[in-house]
Length: 308
Image (cartoon, one colour):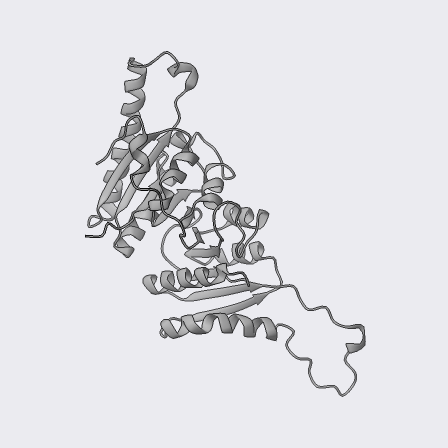
């Protein structure tokens, strides 16, 4: 029997909005019929723990951490009772712990800000680094995390566009909603000698070429999903601005990335960070997994783990 890679939800132990990534991940695991792994990573207080081996401090910290994962699992089971759910509590820097297991992860789901196990670090630290460095797709949950509205895809010219379209079409089909494909481009620069003259025909659509390229990219995916409503948008706004604006009525925004390390897909550098900082719904960074971990679970080398 083939083991299916899980969806991993990084939790931070806070109430209310702190559970949003877990809740989103549980619903997505149910939708995809995938197992869910709840992960809580925390760092020791080095000053307090330096001489605390075997002391009450160590047990108290572990007890509190395992309580976080137990509470998260109970919440996930309430939302997705048919999903196979496990949990693990890890010691160490959260980014490193998350990246260690990313090769064997179907999808990693994080909040846009961290507390508790993520030490209160804002986007730009744990979520930013995992989103840009993980070899698996990553969702950063922010804004409205509930259903409603279309799936929005940022479609550029890079090779990452195919993975964005595959992911976005599948997400829209699974949710039974429309897809909005957005292409950001600079307006053409008119030549000095092309000013319209009296009696000339109406000027051609300056965005026609970009629209044709976008339709060409969409064509094979429209054929695979013939009943899916698809809207195309050509905009002269920046990619980040256009997608942040579209996120106000979307339930998911899908953008692209190529490989490990720096994001180079539909969005680059600061533009991606703008989207992750200001989007009004979850953002999915689509990427095709190209590498696998070496045999053996990366978690087995940890000092102690809690599985349920």
